[in-house]
Image (cartoon, rainbow, N blue to C red; front, top):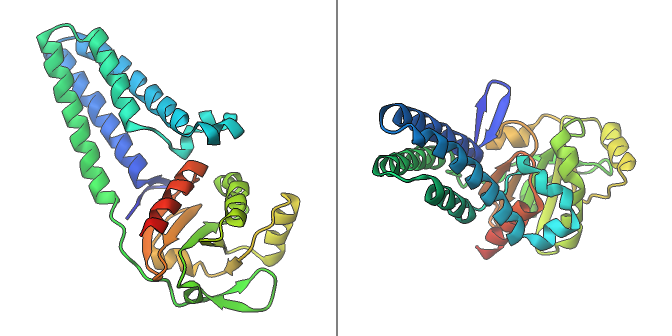
Length: 267
């Protein structure tokens, strides 16, 4: 399970773990501020802000070439992309500037420990990926008529993108996904549309001037049911043996896709 559903909201497992960790941090610092040292509360605010900004800035610097081509994505934090090393450095700087007493230092260490413990527990619970084999289903091709069995793509690493044209995050990531699919010969990309009519899909691709190979129609939504994935978009990374390696829930960034492909090919 690499996603958590709460009502209509769907969170990727790593992001949900981060949210829980931050929540635990704020609760712990609030309690310690009232019982140990009031300055812990002020430190916690600045430490959190410094950590988040530093983590994002570090990720942008580490992937400068990618962001240089699309600088507007620097603010696209909903895609993820944070460097924990840079974030830790930001927290350390805030702590060096604001933690002046022994009580405040104890409070800082305890609250950070609570946050890391909460994050790790949730991350461990949500990060497991069962090596599920490809479903034994045949899907229609967009270009008409013929059907293709998903299992026929075994023998080469496969990226399966579950999408629909009514889904805003799907639309945002699709141009980048199309570009990556056209540029990579070492991985097969499958764009598995969820429940839409052929004319709707063709209309969307034509209006956006997108050219995609391997667009398949999953009218009954067999693929997300097989992998038990919630929401859209979802990107599945499948090894050459046809078994699932990892799942990305939600909009995927160029950096996240590149990293996942590197890990997939390294196996």
